[in-house]
Amino acid sequence: MKKVIINADDFGYSSGVNRGILESFKNGLLTSTTLMANMPGASEAIELAKAYPALGVGCHLVLTCGCPLTKGQTIASDGRFYNLQTYQEKRSTMDEEEIFEEWCTQIDFLLDQGMTLTHLDSHHHVHTFPENLAITQRISERYQLPFRNAYGLEEALSLNYQLGITGFLDLMNYPAIRDITHSFENRKDECLKELQAVLDQLKDHEVTELMVHPAFVDEELYYHSSFNIGRIKEVAILCDETVSQMFQENGIQLYHYGNIGDMEKG
Image (cartoon, rainbow, N blue to C red; front, side):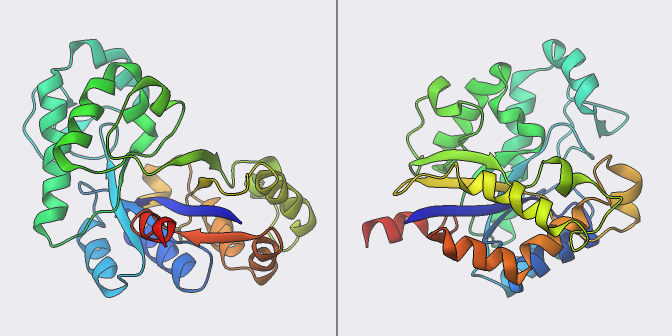
């Protein structure tokens, strides 16, 4: 069997994102998500997570979106994080302890709200950037949680709490799926071929995370994210019966980060 975690980034970004993620879990294939502690929809996302404990929830560490939870002087300007491009320009001037403290504060906020976190990853994958690897190591050791194994992370770092999740693929970032001039239903055959090409990369008896970004569009998402309308197509795909059947026909078992270890032992 092929073992897969389907993880939605950006839980907590906004109410629309939260509703799209929950729909994809309740009526679709989604098994896991990661929550942004610093964004407007965070409190709602926490309550939804508590109401649906079968959804695995981790922390989506943020350094390039929204407002920091700490008062670090080098990691933000006018009370907001730099966007990704400006972050890349400013990173050499940032205090590493401020980044570490900010990420700890984001995790601690979720823990203090009663969340049981399954794993860690980061917005724009900044935890995998070379300049942040030492901080990633410290965070993993402090909280004894696995990080998303993206872009060769485990080749760059020896982390003690990883779960043997060897694969990391984007399930949706392909031309027909991303074409917002056509609905999923109108280009279903082309979209299914793109999904099958991803599933063809899965290997028996290995665990792969498939990254997705489902959401319903609200004002917060539409006006503040360059990737907005296309997310509703991901909800449709994750909730489609044909896609579900495709996963079954490919011999895929679905897990989240919190139960993969137990099921591996069993």
